[in-house]
Image 1 (cartoon, rainbow, N blue to C red):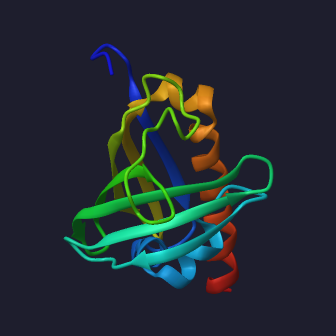
Image 2 (tube, one colour):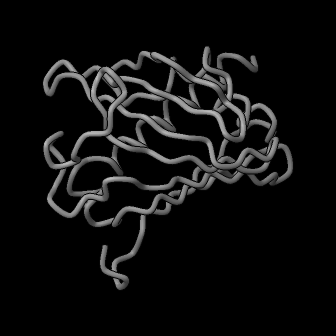
Length: 162
């Protein structure tokens, strides 16, 4: 990615304490209810949420088919920060080319996502930074997918905290 390209950065404010929002990112049972855009579902083949842990999942899309992802948790600071890698894969968990998986030519083969959680009164400001071009993320729908997932997460949090 060219250094002058702006990387993806999205913030979202949740009407819930920081520990509640953080748990939704680290509890596999909660993740499966929101960590896929509208009209799609997620299935985890493996997930170990801890520093040094890993994941392997598939997003099932009725139009485009399955999208397999593998990654590693590089850092988890409770209620504060999660850093993880994302790599396109096949069902067996082998890394595959992003282009072969339908991404644009200059989509990174491996990128890092950093999610931070900040208390603002009884609310939580969650920010995600991903090492992909914001322009390419918007072009491919990845940006819009994050927004849709955060809206789903907001609904899940409202349901579980009422």
